[in-house]
Image 1 (cartoon, helix red, strand yellow):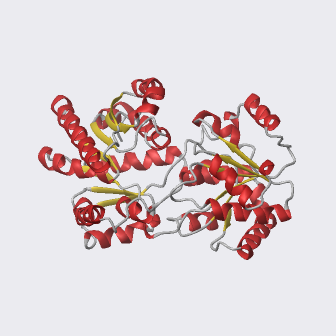
Image 2: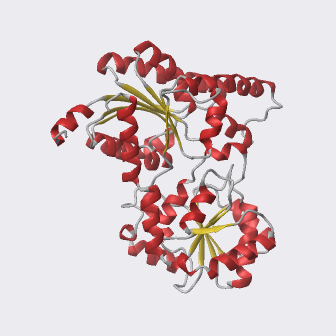
Image 3: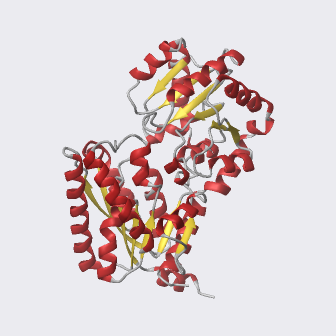
Length: 423
C-alpha cells in the first residue's frame, strides 16, 4: 500500500484543462472550479484555459484568481468575442490553441481534459502531436442542442453546413478520445451509436452535475438577507413558496410553469411563485398578467451566487419544466442537485437525462410528464400526499449520496489515474 506522500508524488501531473465556459460564469464557478480545487488538493497541477465574457470578467476576475492561486490552478482566461458569431468562434478557438501550445512548451502536459465539444476539436490535434491522453467531458450533445434549442435554424444554408460538418466530426471526437465523461447513463448507448460501436479499452464514466453540499446548506443562510427578503416581498412564514432557480430562456418552459402555478393556487391560495433569475423580469411579469395571475403572487429576484442558498431556503418546493428533446438525454440539471442539497423537494418533467429515474428511485420529488391541467392537478395531489417530501434532512442526504462534490472528485480522480495508466 502506498503512503500518503508516495500517493501525492504519483499524482503530481500537469493537466491542461480547456473550457468553453468562463470561470466568471455561474457554470464555471459551480461546475468547473470546485472539481479542479478538489483534484488539485490530490496533487494535480492545472493549467486552465477558459473563455470569459468581458463584463463578468471585469467584475469577478479578482475573486476567481484568488481561488485559483490558493489551489495551484494556473488560470489563463480569454475574453469571449461574439460580434461576428461564426468567425469569432473560430478566432477564439485559434487563440485557445495558441495558448495551449505555448503552455505545453513551458510545462509539458501529462493529459488534456476538455469540457465540451469545441475545446475537444482543437485538443484532438494537440493530443496526437504531443502523444498524450485526452478526456472528452461532453457535458451534453452540444451540436444537437444548438438545433433542439432553436439556436441554429437549419433552413439557413450556412448553419446547415456547419451542423453537417460538426456531426461528421463528432464521430471522430468520440472515437479518438481515450476517456469520455457523460452526465447521464442514458447517453452512453447513443455515444456508442455515434462512434459506430463500442471501442475496446475506451473508458466511459458517468458523472452527473455535482454540488458543493457544504455550500448549499442551511448553514449558508444569511439571516439578515432572509428577513429582509421576507419583509420586502410581503412573504409570511406560513406561505407556500414554490421556487424556480436559473434562466428561463432556451430550454425552460415558463408558460407551462405559470399554468402549473395557477392550478397550485386553487389548492393553496396562499402560494407564491419565487423566481430567482438574472433574466430580465419584465417579460415574466407580463406573462403573469396575461394569464390572470396577481402580480403580488409572483416574486422575481436577481441574485448573485452567494445569495442563492438564502433565497432558496424560503422554498416549500421547487418547480422546473424543461423542453424534452433528443439532445436532452445527455443533460443533468444542476439545479436538481442544488435544491435537494438544500432539502427542497422538486416537481419537474421527465425526458431529461436520468432525472426521472433518479427522482422516482430516491423519492425526492414528483414527475409531471404532461403539460395540461389534469396532469398538474395530479402532480399537486401526489406532492401533498407524499409526506416523505417534507423531510429535508432525508432529501439532503440523498443529494450528498447522488450528487455530492466529494463523490464527483473521487470519480474524476479514478478516471485521471486510468487515463494516464497510473493504475
